Length: 335
Ligand code: AQP
Image 1 (tube, rainbow, N blue to C red):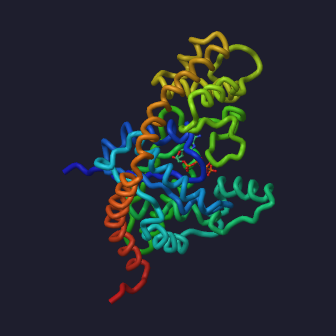
Image 2: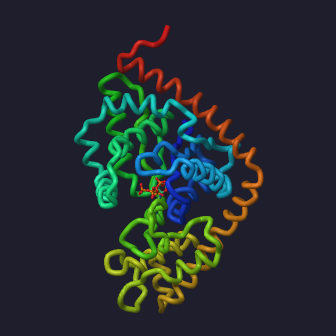
Image 3: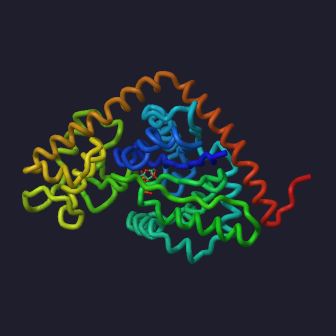
């Protein structure tokens, strides 16, 4: 019998979900992944605690993220949608993986270095969980025996670490884990900030004028795109080095319309027209998601039930794998 792929992917409730999250991840989950595989999609709330956070906001954003995933088209009849903190197996396994990873490899993580710099610049202390967070991410994936992990390219290094940990654990203690692989979206693997097109559009960034949130009103989203930073010169060329602003717009428009950025570059003679069409495309892309989100908010018990059923299924899948890893590493099972 053909093997059905198992897919795991997650999203952090560190801010309102963005166009980057949608084009780089959620859309592929909705359109492809939930139809072709046994897919688990997790709002990874524990990961939102690695930096300064407000408890009430994390709770609110967690519910909002789940609601938006359903609004975007994840179907709980087809896939498993759940909250990370509802399934204890993630943290249980993370400890075993902390005993597998080394201090040196954790400190080499690019995101860790970047975030340490950010926290220190803001005068905040660095939480230990910021260092160990990629191990928890590895546990998220390995607990489910996932073969594939759809991610944007910002997560590629963490995926490599997950693979290394799985291989190392299997070699030392016997075959406990499936070694997963990253699946990157073909276009819009990295949507950039509209005001700073050399950095990623990230939902946790404080400056929001270059970030389109999925729940932005149409006129707000339009204004953000129309005010996007473009580059010196006036020709529309697809060149990330020389024209990062224009290239970002071309990639967003391409991702929204299913066309190729290079082909679109040839179709525009001015930045203004490119911005207008990109703004229209973004507004039309987000509109149905926003409308469906409003409908779902009117029925919170539906979202609660999705989360309850999702956690139950996830627990059932993860527990045998994590129990087996506990035995393999040398821990005595309870009598
Ligand atoms: N700008 C982006 N372009 C393409 N894909 C993106 N993703 C995130 N941003 C972009 C993908 O969305 C999924 C969930 O992302 P996340 O919650 O892990 O990261 P975030 O939205 O970037 O949130 P933060 O808190 O702003 O992140 P950092 O940690 O960078 O501070 C992932 O598949 C991600 O690749």
